[in-house]
Image 1 (tube, rainbow, N blue to C red):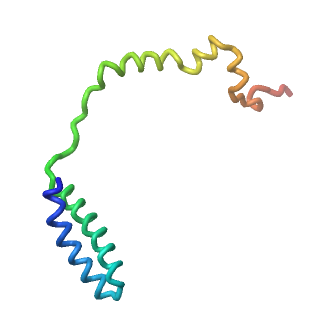
Image 2 (image 1 turned 90 degrees about the vertical axis):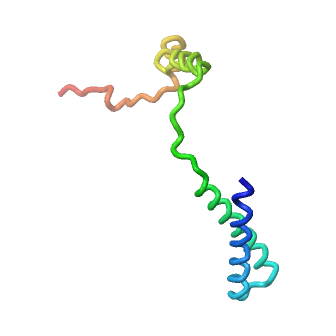
Image 3 (image 1 turned 30 degrees about the vertical axis):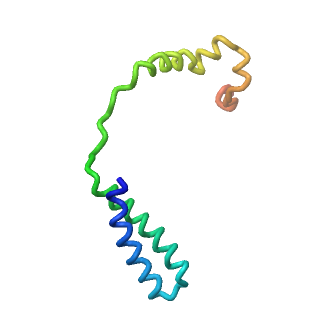
Length: 102
């Protein structure tokens, strides 16, 4: 990857260096800002030109299945059946629970 980044980064660094000089910045800041812009531009160029494509979906490893089964066993409704004190911490809407008879 560095062989793709460095040539473009050097050219962009020189370009930005001269642009910042023409805009009236100090020499030290021109060098630093030009280097940052050159490196960023070189990285974007290398990423843009690298062949690849959309990643293909892969199957989940076999390790995930036991974790998924364990997660299904710990659903909140099943936990409340096992541990009734957890109902104290659930939200209940009391307005709908009472029905007025007229």
